[in-house]
Image 1 (cartoon, rainbow, N blue to C red):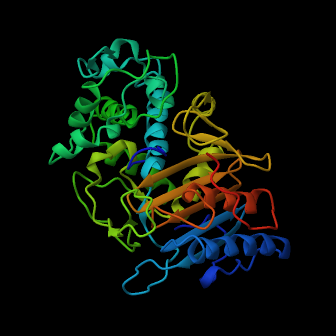
Image 2: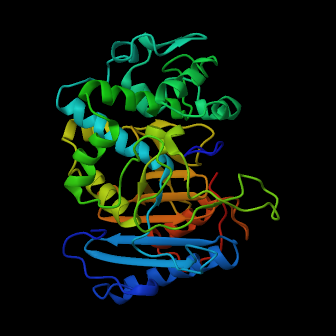
Length: 393
């Protein structure tokens, strides 16, 4: 989740069905019910105090499931948000892309020490960028120093279509942020390049690799990367509302549901559901997707700068230390009208995924990350007071 730009089935086998309206799963004990009630109160506050159109959360706690929501999926019809709702997940896409790269590394089809120049000759070049000094690991953990193309919105808006090569060209028209390996800076360009490397290594489209390697084996029926410039969200979904990152409370609200996400592609173009994300991260954190060596590499973190407070970054995944001292693992994503957080315990046995279908919030939170942090605290710290704590950054 990039804080400074536009960018950034559904139950485990054996889980009881979830009641509608945010009620606790029948298999959850009384102590769990109290924790979910705290989560539900925060969801309601996000709408009544924060002014969000709608919010949903799905909790996976071992073999227990809980789903809750507040507000609406569609302000015109008043339709409620549902457990089946699909939404744009922004930078959580990076975790899927990194997972595919790690699988290819496990298969010996590439190495994290391979350079961008080896796989994409002449692509990372210009204004002191040097692909021979940038390896795949640097792309995945944001230590490459490559300029973040979404920081040049003017250039991005000049393109009518957004093939990956054009996104990289925007980045190459600027100097690097630092020399490769000498710092940390969130750059969407890193993951566009990683997606291009996946396609070069496999000879198949990135969307197909994600489907065949992750979505289909895990039964993630609502999770996919749109092909090309397809602007629609297929299947049941919420409307996505944006104020185009204007801070004025009276700023006009725009419907951004139909969006050509090719401008984000491997860096943030995917669509999913809360249940799918819980299942994916539960399996990833639990070591059921990658072999031990790749699992260790993926969860080896580096310090971050100017990002989410108290966070560290691995290869497409991050850890966040909550105000109560607990550490959770996962990823967040922000796109026009859709902000999401999917974080859980290191063993994947407990997960919380939250999505809001607006990109603003009032009522004591600086941005949606503030309510996401409060929700994680309510679940992982069993905090009884749901008063806003504010954004962690």
